Image 1 (cartoon, helix red, strand yellow):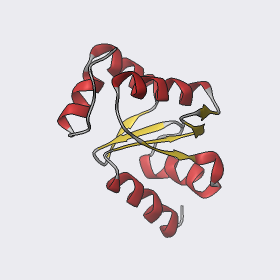
Image 2: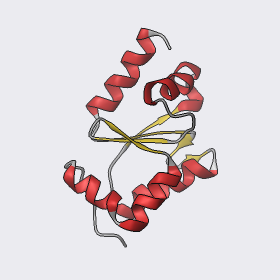
Image 3: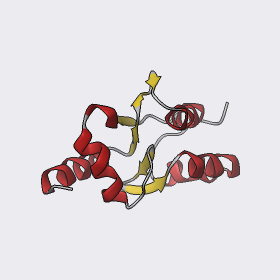
Image 4: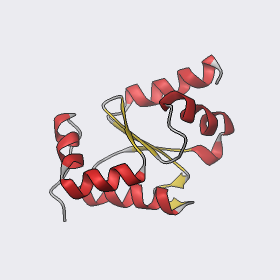
Length: 112
């Protein structure tokens, strides 16, 4: 990963309370895992920034090195890597994800 790509990713992660690096957009996810990740965040009522990795090959590859995690989507909360859609689902089901958003100061509504 180039220093420029790393700096671009770092800026997005650090300047947004909640960021989802995904395939596609929240309105039009391009894979089932990204769709599930968006659905979880929407279910919790969390406002989040999204980055469509399909629009930028450097970001698509660079995010994997940035997090040392091989798959996309990737969720960041408060500048910290949380995980992919499977981890998000486990944390959502246990209530940990809602707690994480509250502790990070990211507004999360009651689960619907």
